[in-house]
Length: 277
Image 1 (cartoon, one colour):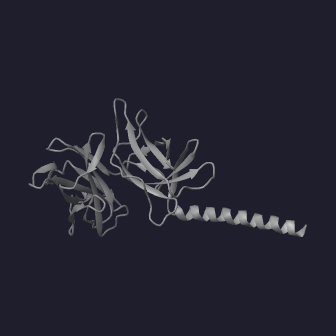
Image 2 (tube, rainbow, N blue to C red):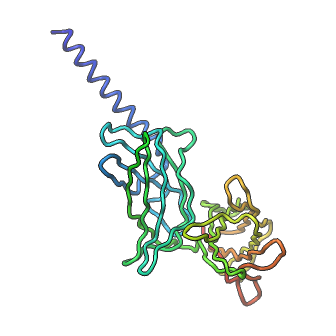
Image 3 (spheres, rainbow, N blue to C red):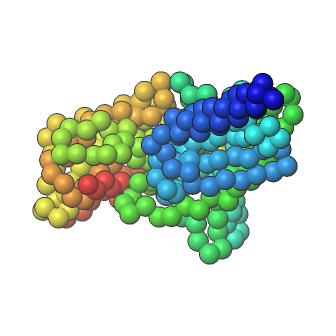
């Protein structure tokens, strides 16, 4: 009898330990993230996480975890692909986005980015077709994504002087400060239903503070293309807190203006992004 009780107690301890380990693993995998939503089909449950509590227009880092509904175990070796899509009244379109990839140092966390170009409204909405491939079989979920308008302008769409359609997005700094910040911008060319990262154009940035007589700042460096992430990297000098307008000019290799214009005493560029802190 004592042996039976001992064995039952050992099994209980093992179950509690396993559950505690699973909970600790989940906490460490998603530390500093907020779960935004969860969507399921017959086979899998997909958790969608973010740095913020929701999606907004502009650049968004998006994180995924996939749980097998039969075993209750989070997948570590799944292959995920997706297609974010805006459904409008008369047409549908996608947005600049990356592939979903397993995060280094994580067991069950996958990551991608999306640059949402417009907000959800009463008649138009975003969703994302997510395909989960495991053991050669494909399973699909399609969550609806609620995208709100950012409080500042984080993405700009324009037709260039070359008649091509571009999207320019603010990526970093996400936590700006009164200092010289690392500046990261994304520039994309519309190509059919998708978007390609632009490598061969030049971006000039002229930051101004509208509330302070439109003054600029010293120490800025125009961003240049970095093939390691397909973004443009530079330096952004912010001398004080408040709203800053990043006036932009995009030029080709011949120094011809593709988009934007120089700032004058009375006019800002017609191509700009904003940062506020």
